[in-house]
Image (cartoon, rainbow, N blue to C red):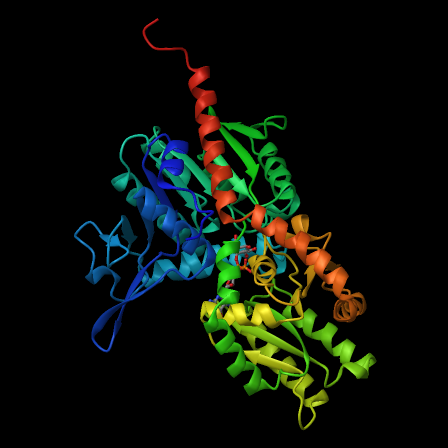
Length: 500
Ligand code: GDG
């Protein structure tokens, strides 16, 4: 946690000292068996590692799927365990889900229906009836766990698209709860959202919240358009709110940021320098320009489109052969789903083909890494890269772009950014903006980035860093908790005092 993190007093006062219950699919700590011993995995993702210190300081409850194989061996009879394990500061309540439920709820409905719909790829939707049943049941299980844990008047904060139905289930049981949800992926237009057969049920579930947060203004408008078409719902665009079933839900953009100070410090660390010395030597990166891509192997991230632009560059501007190496850090993700398996095969075979086509005795065009890197390793790649290429076909925000910016502690690099990311709303002016399917324009932008004069690079990076530090993950938390307080104050004023 860095100096920008809110103090216990700040968070508690914004929440009026009410209990905070965070609910997410992934858990912040998981217990696994390793050679018969129980070991603990630490928070990994950006969001988990930002919320964990907040939870440690305010001490609430985190409800999540217990996915580790030793998870249920260390909990009490109610599924609870204190975390962090060495000095417990808050309660992790683990929700057990059978393999069949995970298959249908997570790999099925969440990632083969909601994910493609929200990323505007409706051809990939696989709307099997049993996926929906499992999604409903899993949401019911999360909601039951929340109701079992929450004290009086809690603030319950749901994360993401895995939990669209849970807020209404919670609200039905616990009308005293203030329910809020952050939707981390894009919210599509109404026409696209209707590709999902249960779109009305999903909206009803989400409108059980008091506050729904999305990354951008555009997603906020799309959400209101969808709600306006729900029978029985009334949308008030002036207050950006929806009244449904007698209850008002506010919808607001809260662009997520990263812990920028932390990423800057990682990039300055000795461990990052050591990592780079070894990595750079192994892959012959000392005397070439380096372009970098970092992502899960997901069809929304535009990896084949990026490889096509790089191939075009090496093909039409051969001076860059031997001068520019592209490093692709790719993590296997959702490998049980056929569309993801196809993408993995396609990316690996394209990398091989491009390397076969252009490689020389002492130069390899694409360095492809699937290993999970330590944070310092990733920081080293960000720091040393001359270009970061983000070419998503759709992306709710894209934190890689922001992590790259925060890690520019030496000679500043250049961000090449897809206009189809949420991040483009904030960073598009100082990044080199591309359309990922315009191969020619994309190749031009790569070359332009490589030739950008140093004063132009510094000016752009300075502005980008100002932006990323000003809108970091703690500003994101603060904006949401302030909105919670404003909504609650507004409601208290609207309620006539009792007994008069
Ligand atoms: C979803 C939305 C939205 C990757 N490889 C390694 C590693 N990573 C970390 C990165 C970054 C994270 O993974 C990826 O975050 P993104 O935001 O780019 O993408 P999604 O996973 O799709 O996230 C997205 C986000 O939610 C938050 O709301 O921005 O639009 O799709 O933090 O650093 N980290 C380490 N080693 C790796 O090898 N340590």
